Image 1 (cartoon, rainbow, N blue to C red):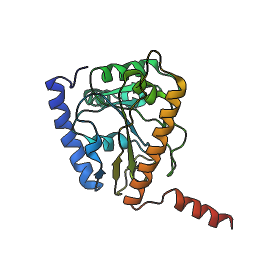
Image 2: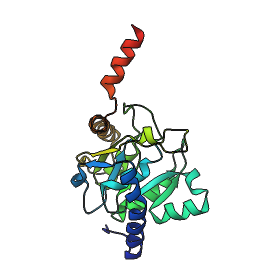
Image 3: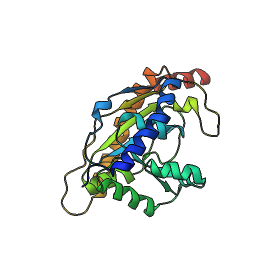
Image 4: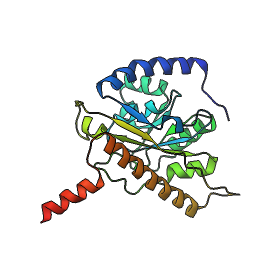
Length: 233
């Protein structure tokens, strides 16, 4: 596997990264915990929590390396945005369908030695609970023999929740978890092993999300349960 994209793409990415992420870091007081857990070399899958469109940018704080990412196809309909997202490493994915083209693009990027962000929740969710995850990220990890890195982003839902277009100020905390290694295998990828890895990812992502929410001063699962009990009394 190759370890990095061409020099021109790396320079462009770093310039755009600095221009875009620096004001975001200041505006939203971004804090990252566990940045050293992101592999410095080789391919891996970034598996972030997903509560806002802003998560695309916040995920970029975990490493200086270019992270390829799947973006909903609507983001690529605007020519300017499509050009920027493509140069930053993005590629479109059709939501609500098994998009084999997007999975092939992700696999090609991973085989080239680059990290790829794939949201295991599939689409944006609300609240502090990480629920059922899709098997896609862990299937690719098992197939290619690469790790999955859970990344929790807390505060993005308060900045730009689903249905809103104007960001609001709020502190953001990003917590990077330990890489989850794929099962050793011979021959075809086994579904039960992928399912077990996906459940391990869900558990670890939830732990990191709980941690991020607490550091960001936001209510977590226990807070929500307590408020729900109060409402029913």
